[in-house]
Image 1 (tube, one colour):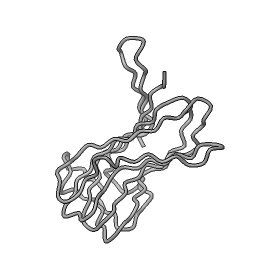
Image 2: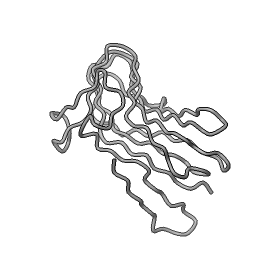
Image 3: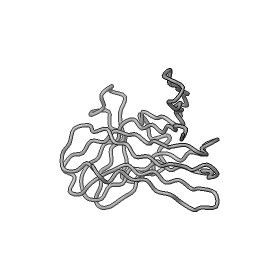
Image 4: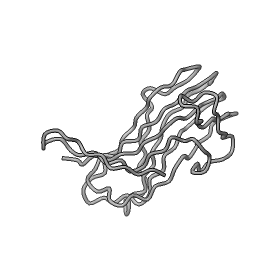
Length: 163
């Protein structure tokens, strides 16, 4: 896992952004879901590999589980790259957050899922964590609803302070 802190150098009115989690997904070492998942070095941009999912039906791929140190009063932003081949159905990013005392909140990118055969597409979903709410666990997933091949490239979870 690579953790980096970024701050904007803009006007004081803009919130700072902090990277909470980042992975190029160049190995299966950190991937939680292993069934139907392999490392593929033939389609990555840098030759180091990406995650390949050969789906025979609906499945959820859990890429990471993060226990964030401080996520009160922030917007969580989950970004990732997806590519598909002959996907009969759709694939999209999903972020699940366990919030202390409030249960689970889910954020999905359903407006523009990938399907069919596509080149690399950048996707993003976000979730606002109100002041007084404390996130215990964040799960970064890719949902595949259908049959076909999905590749998953670099993923990033960042947070920005809510004004």
